[in-house]
Image (cartoon, rainbow, N blue to C red; front, side):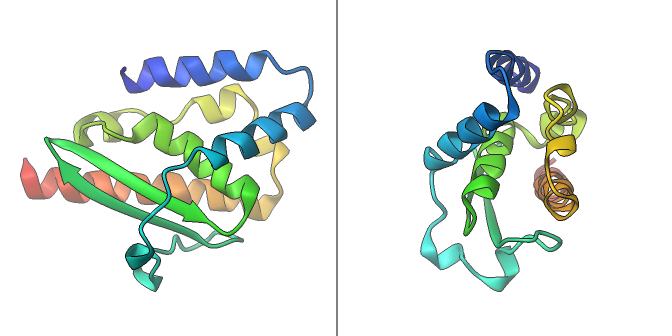
Length: 140
């Protein structure tokens, strides 16, 4: 699936919920499906700066695509990073850099997060894009 198709799928899923309590519960459920980062990557270097909770993000380059793994010590944040990985995992650096996560605005996610969590969300997106930029520079 393309990044755009995945984002459209997420938007459609969120439209099924009547209120934000249901959406929060869904985000937490999504977090439970996150393929967790290997303990060896839970290092200071892989911590995303600017997040209220701890979020570790690691990336590998395989078959011209980036494979991300992540984890967080907060259940809601784990769900948020899981949604972002669903969008960007197993995509090319070029595609990752070309597509902003517009689903965030479409589902009003930032408006329903605390200011510090919203800043953390921005930091997560930035780090995902930085990995894509680094791999694009290295391999293209």
